[in-house]
Image (cartoon, rainbow, N blue to C red):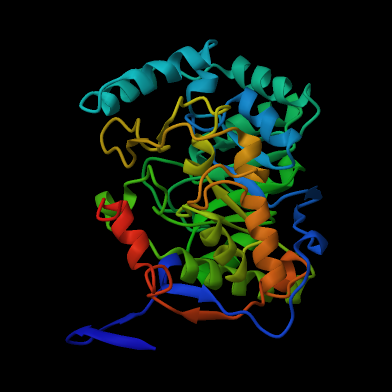
Length: 386
């Protein structure tokens, strides 16, 4: 349904995580009997959780730890890991800087050129640990970095920008031929980011194995404020998932829908899957782990942009180990730990034995879902209760 927002202008209503809820039905399943595996191309992941390609979240150490726990961490080839040998010394400088100079410092630290030999070295470091290796870069660098990463043994390559589309016009830059790139790489390629049904279909036709969904929802991303663009994640995921289903029906090929960013707790993650996601990717939740290179801080991929930063450094604090965040035991009551346990419990409660069944869960519009009956919780948080 469209609504008039002015003379001859209509806008449709869209929905984010806090505006919807899952409605249980007539069947429940033991959470231990649920299957949370998912597929991206030819690879089967034990858990459907990906760590964002952000320098405060993923370095080789974190990627190895995430891989050994069943998830997948994506390494940013446009960042610190391919500019410096001593990665954690650099991220420590960023985490130790004061708020007033953080963005300026990040811009300075991202000025040195990318060293191609470090791309090879980082990929090999991850592969030598016996886990899947996924790396990411912007479209402008994909044609150059892709073959290097592939030759080094990379398993999955991510082409990621604020908004990606098959149709790109520029007088100065040559567009990446995504269809040719996917064919030449011969390994699964994930593309992002997208929030549109038609654009999603066009991207799937290029041969990608996965599609990142989301523009500007991340905790450290400021694109929505700086550029004014974005679609709430529930609606964006549903629209792209419908495109996936249509594409699969017509071609027999399933492209993984990966909701990227905007989740703050296990409940949000569960709503992603109920909206149609095959996997989720986020950064802030993993930046809180002891294994993350950001030392309790998290910054967006576009923070170092020289002319128009679309990211900021945010403090997330270290709250636990990566294993606690993924599998518990949870030491916090805010839904930020034991994410896999939360997902399996929600699936069992909804009567879904696997991710595909969970994608069919009933969603309801429920803007009061997080506040209804929570007066004492709210009062305690602001110090009214003792």
